Each structure stands twice: as C-alpha cells, then as structure tokens.
Amino acid sequence: MRYAVISTPLGPVTLASTDKGLASVHFGNHVPLDGLVDNESNRRFIRQIDEYFHGERKQFDFPLDFSGTSFQMAVWRELLKIPYGQTRSYGDIARNLGKPGASRAVGMANHEDHIAIVIPCHRVVGRDGSLTGYAGGIHLKQQLLSLERTTPLFT
Image 1 (cartoon, rainbow, N blue to C red):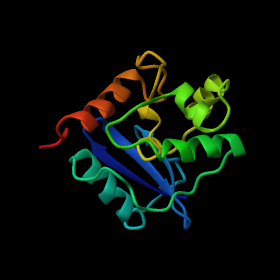
Image 2: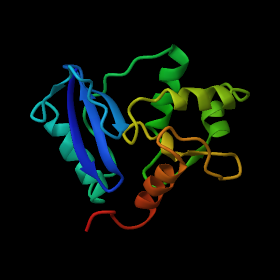
Image 3: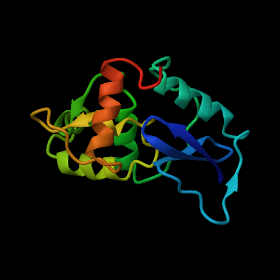
Image 4: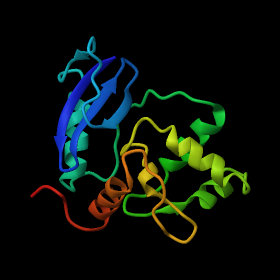
C-alpha cells in the first residue's frame, strides 16, 4: 500500500493505492506508522481529486482496487452510476439491485465504502431526502453535496 495525504477544503484526506488502483480515501491523516508515503505513485489520484474539489472534474477515470462481499460490491458499482450533483435514496439503490427490501443492507454497504468521494456514498440520502449517516460525518456529506450543486470550494 502506498499513501498520500492531500489538503482539501474539508481538511486532510489520506489516499492509499496498490498496483491495481486506488484502494481507499479517508478523511484525516491515516497513514500507518510503517506506511510508505509515495505521492508520485498516487499522482493520478491526487490530481483528479484536486480537480474534483476545484469543480473541474465530475467523474473519475482511474482504476479502483476494492473488495467486499458480492452484495457490497454490487452496491458500490451502483453508487458509481449516480451522476455528479444528484442523489438517490437507499431504497432506490436497493430497487436498482433487484432487492427492494434491502435498504438497510445498502446502508451497511455504504458504511463499508472505503473509497469515499470516488465511490460516492455521499450521494445516498434518506427516502425523504434527509441526510443520513456518513462515515466522515453529516457535515462532510453536506459539504460534498453542496460542492456538487454549486461552486467549487477552492477559488
């Protein structure tokens, strides 16, 4: 695993990658004590995430290295289909997967999403449009959604 910590309008964000692609995005500095910090290996990811925060990128085009249960991976692939600036409910995702009663399971899969921002679990909201759980905190979810609906957080 190769790490990079980048500055964003939401504070520091830690990226971790493998030879296969981006493996995690976490809010804060989460480099293990023995972790290899390698900005050059993460250059492509750093650039595109920076472009996202500048309002210059609406879709990422780098490889991802994620693993989970078959259901989790199906949920994450469905999240990747949510267009920039739009939201879907947990029920919408469950129905799209052919499992209309699985809203809570979709929520649990979102909770296990380790590639925040890129796999946009921040775009999933409650049935009534309310902001519900987000690993980085509801305030970060709100800021990401606001970024996608208005102007860049960087000027």
